[in-house]
Structures are given as C-alpha cells and as structure tokens.
Amino acid sequence: MKAGVLFSGGKDSALAAVMLSRDYEVELNTFVFRPGQDIAAVKDAAQALGFPHFTRVLGDALLQEACDMVVGCGYPNDAINLVHRHAISRLAALYPVVGDGTRFNDRVPMLSTGEVQSIEARLGCSYVRPLLGFGTSEVKRLAERHLVVRFGETGEIENGDYEHEIRGALRDRGCDLASLFPARHRQSLVVSVICG
Amino acid sequence: MKAGVLFSGGKDSALAAVMLSRDYEVELNTFVFRPGQDIAAVKDAAQALGFPHFTRVLGDALLQEACDMVVGCGYPNDAINLVHRHAISRLAALYPVVGDGTRFNDRVPMLSTGEVQSIEARLGCSYVRPLLGFGTSEVKRLAERHLVVRFGETGEIENGDYEHEIRGALRDRGCDLASLFPARHRQSLVVSVICG
Image (cartoon, one colour):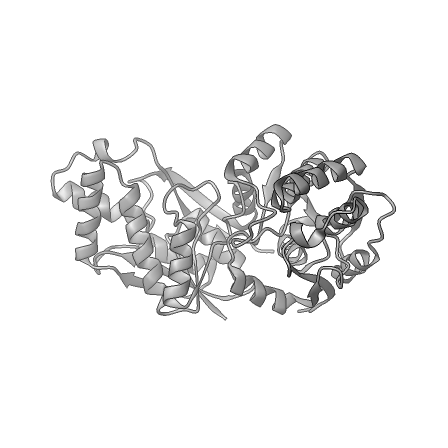
C-alpha cells in the first residue's frame, strides 16, 4: 500500500516517513508555492532517506492568500494550517494513505479531529500521523535512533516548510517580519540515516 | 529502552506492542483487580506475540470505586478512564516508557492532553500511543497485516479489559448490567501473529 508523506526535509517528517515505511510503500512529497523554488537541500535529505521524492506546486494564489492571512491575523498559525490542509488534500487525490510528521505537542500545523474526519470522508483517503502519540522526548529519542540531523534558526536551514516562502513573499510586500513571526524558530534538516 | 505496554489480549493493544517493538524492548502488562482472576486466554495471546508478559493486581478497593462510579454515572466511561489512569501510573513507576493501544477514534479509555502531560511530568516517564495517529480503517489494515484475531461480544471473548471484572462485581451487587453498559460491545482476542 502506497503512502504519500508530506516532507519538509526536517526531523519530524523524516521520522514519520521512516516509521511508516515499515508498513507502507512510502513516497515523499514536498510542496512549494512557486515552481522555481530551490529545494536542493530537501532533495538531498530525501535521497539520504532513500525514498522516492516528488516536488509539487501549490501556486501563487495560495501563497498570496496565506500572506493576507498572516497580515490579517498578525501571526502565521492560521495561514500555515490553511496551506497544510491544501497540501493534504492534494496528496489525498494521489494516494490511498497520506501521512505527515505532526507530533502530540505541535500547535501548527495541527488539524482538529473534525478536520481529519472531514478529509478522510470527503477525499476517501486515510490520513495518518505516526508521531501523534509521541511526546517531545520520545520523538527526540526516536529521531536520534534513526537520523543524523542539522539544526539552525529559520534562514540558516533551507528546509521545505511552508513558512520559508511565505516569509519571502511578505518581505517582497515590505512587511515587518519581526512583528509577524516568533523571534526564534528552530528548524531541522536531515543529513543522513542511521542504519540498523 | 524498555517499554511497558498495557495489554488486554485484544487487537489494539497487541498491534501497539508490535509497532513499539521496532524501537523499544516491549514487555506486556495485564491488570486485574483480583489476584485469582483467570486470564489464561490473555497469557496465550501474549505468548503468541512472543513478548514477556506480567500480570499486575489493582486491588479490590479500586474495583469497588470503579463500580460505585459506574452506578453513579449510569455508564462505564468515567470508571474505565479512572482504572486506566491507575494502570498507567503503576507502569510509570516500573518503566521509562509506558504505552497502550489508544486509537484516534477511541472514546474510552482516552486521557486528555492535560492528563498525559501531568502523568509524564509527575511520574517522569514517557507515555506513548503508537495508534493515536491512525483512524479505524488503518488500524484494521495494520492489524490484518500483523495479527490473526478472534472477535466476539463481551462475555464470549475472555480478554483482559477492565470492563470484564467490573461487570462481574456489579452483577454480584445485583445491578442491572443492561441499563449500565452499551448493548453491543465487540471485543477481540489475538490468536496468532503473521510473520514477515
């Protein structure tokens, strides 16, 4: 059974892919807004994991909608969830099972129980989150067991989370990013896999 | 790293144990209220899975408290959650990691986010639920991939869920079980494991 996993190149989505690969034929999927977006580091991370990897384009209209929402809310959470729902819906049309790296303690992206049930019912897929039942310390332990990961602040680490392009588009609009995004946001990028 | 898994002999706790065994040294733990309780079928299920199995006694005081709660509420949910919290707390004193077969769509036993955080903080353990991120259809698919399971109504299947002994104690009190418990409640018992 194929499972399409949302993949940013970061620790959580990589660990979710590793865990799902024990029971499913995993394919990694990275979403960008604009086709020219450079995600070389994410492609390297996918290659290190050894699963097929696809880049999919969400389009500029959704990017602008997400930017409007960040400006309207004054913070990025709702916009990130909006984009996440779009990405899952796109994969649901392509795979019988769609997965991501959502953890128990995550705030965004995080779909409500009703949103999950709606996606599964409307789109006829299963939406699975192998890390949902694990807290921070166990996710850390499992990641250290399976992955070599590089950490850094947003800007230093070129992974494929939605925020990167949203920040760029808001910068193009002349927005003050410091007033819209949390000051510190640690990002991760998978470098290699620990075998065995 | 050892993980103590709550084990009823049923499909969900067995599947949780199988999934956790890929990353942890799993030990199965079945809780009974009274030491003489016959759980031969649960022991057979544990042997089929091939993990060490321990029977632990919760005591008659908790059984009576649970019965009082069922009668007071008019339904068993709160009492089942009470017993589940006790069982997890007991395992948390014995293992660094405690797991169970809670699924995304379960209503009971189901601890709230606050209860989970409280258990982890107070008792210094990790509480993990490998099936929490999987809906009904995926749990079914995974169980069919790994386990041969026998199904039946409560009474026909002698697994080790808490309800069995609570029903017995309420029957001893002369209570009308039909007014306190749902009419139909499908139970499961693991018969064997599908290798490979």
